[in-house]
Amino acid sequence: MRLKPQFILALPLLASLCFSPVASAKTDVNSNRDKFIKMMVKKHKFDSKALNKTFKSFTFKDKIIRSMNRQAEDMTWGKYKPIFLTPKRTKQGLEFWKKHEKTLAAASKKYGVPAEIIVAIIGVETSYGRITGGYQVIDALGTLAFGYPRRAKFFSKELETFLLIAREQKLDPLKIEGSFAGAMGIPQFMPSSYKAWAIDFDGDGKKDLWHNPVDAIGSVANYFSKFNWKTGEEVTFPVKVVEKTARKALTKRIKYKYTLKQLEKFGITLPKHLDKKRKGLLIDLTLKSGKKEYWVGLHNFYVITRYNHSTLYGMAVYQLSQSLRKGYKGS
Image 1 (cartoon, helix red, strand yellow):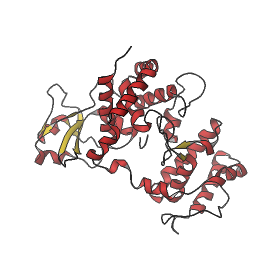
Image 2 (image 1 turned 60 degrees about the vertical axis):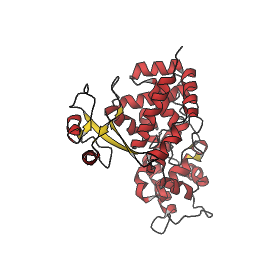
Image 3 (image 1 turned 90 degrees about the horizontal axis):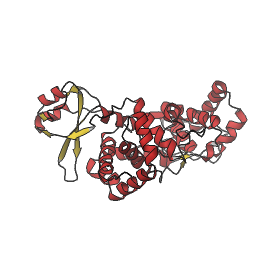
Image 4 (image 1 turned 90 degrees about the vertical axis):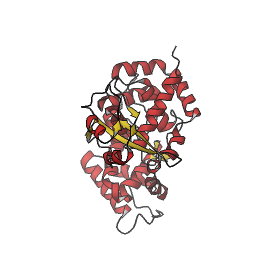
């Protein structure tokens, strides 16, 4: 979870540590790091020497800061769509579905989440486990916790949770890799998501989201279930609009402000069978041509965007899921 929705972990002073312009006098990375160590020792009874040794290899990375400031979700749909909706990704998704058919069926039955949605999430996040990130999680979270003031509080908490997970699971925190934001494993759970929603779906006593697709599948389904996925309900659909009035229904954030009945009053044509008391979100997508395409997202679309708070992400997951559903031929 980027931020995957949608999917998912101190130190003696480093004489050779290089600081970016972001890590200015206002952001004393070393000082923030040392305060963090003291907190972990006091709050969670970490051994001070061991924790300092763990963080000795920590490296502040400018590239991580640049990546945070230049995320794909800032693109238009015309540029975003071709990244995730390709014949190759669909083909690999169908192969993944076939290989883990029984697990996906079991997860879908237990949690009520369609197999194609689970597969699409994993496909968008990591190309079905092929690309899980090349950063040490401790570097990613440390850089953002100690040198990224805008989100320092959030990432400090994620780093705290990451170290607790590593201790509980008896994992070496220096050997765990993930995304530039610290998302981990096949479903790209942030540490807090791992703690809250990761499950041992194959019953082997471990919650292994790094190497075990069974646990990853179960955990994604559990995540959606906990965010109240509604089995059998629509996700989103394209609509025709009177653009001049419809654009007044757009919201800056993913906020379900209007009922479907209210959306109709903005000049949006909706399917007749829908309960107009339900809430919906008007989505505008800018195509490569510069023209606009309009959709309405329902509750389940909102659930997808809990994985990563982006309408582009939600649309990519949904459209990939439909491509997978169309191509799937079960045994």
